[in-house]
Structures are given as C-alpha cells and as structure tokens.
Image 1 (cartoon, rainbow, N blue to C red):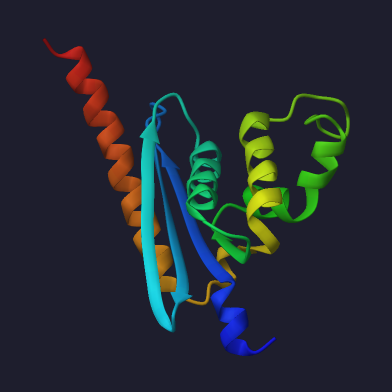
Image 2: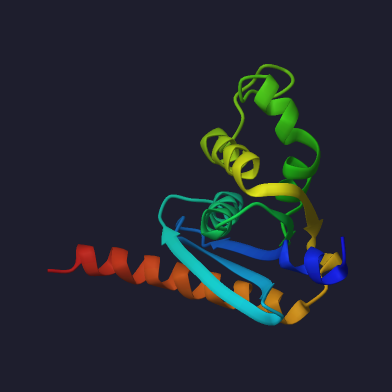
Length: 165
C-alpha cells in the first residue's frame, strides 16, 4: 500500500470534554483526513448537564466516530488517561465481561463504552488512542479544548434560561 493510499484511509480524531463544579459540560471532536490529496477538517460538539469530564470526552469520541463514513485507520488523541487506557487496554475485556469491571463491579459510563466499542467495530480497520502528549498537532488540541469549554458555557446558559421566567 502506498503512502497516498494509506493517507486516504487514515483519520485523526482529537477529542476534549469539560465539566464545571455544577456538572455542566461540553465536548468537542475534530476530525482530520486527506480527501483527494487535500486536507479536510470537521468539528462537532455538544453539551449536557449532570455530567463529568470523562463522560463528555467519551461523548466526543462517539460524535467523531459517528461522523466517519467508511472504515479507516483511526488515531484518537485525548488528554484523559482513563479514555486512553480504557480504549487501548480494557475495552475488549469489558465487552467479554458484559460491561463490568474485572472484580464484577459496575463500570462507569458503560453505556458510552459499549457504544464506542460497537462504532469501532463498524468504522475502524484499526485504531490507536494516543494520550495527548503524543499529539502530532497541538493546535488541533487547543481547538477542541476551547470549543468544549464554549459548549459547557452553552449548557450553563441554557440551564439558566430554563429557570428564568
């Protein structure tokens, strides 16, 4: 396989999630690939309440994977070590364990881990999750951090608007 053919099948996915003390959170996913020799970038995001940073980051992974149209070699970049180790080391063990921890206890965010597992089966030829210090493009990391914070502010604003008459 030539580099050009390989590049057509590679997608880089930067993800970030954030949450404040009140549980308002936001997430952002940035997809990068080469289409017909040209760079293509797409950003996606959202927000929620009663959430955590890890949950928002997993939602970013899901949003990014859902946007992929055909099977690809996927490189995911995250700042959250639990997401990196969960996807690189534990997700197959959890799937065999019916989405429970090794000790039989409940797995936090099992619904999201299971959805990611299913999406990876559908969308990836192979995948690798990189803990952020390995990011080949720190600018994209800054974009997802900034946008996830913007989405968290939208969550807070939306909640306030609901409360006010």
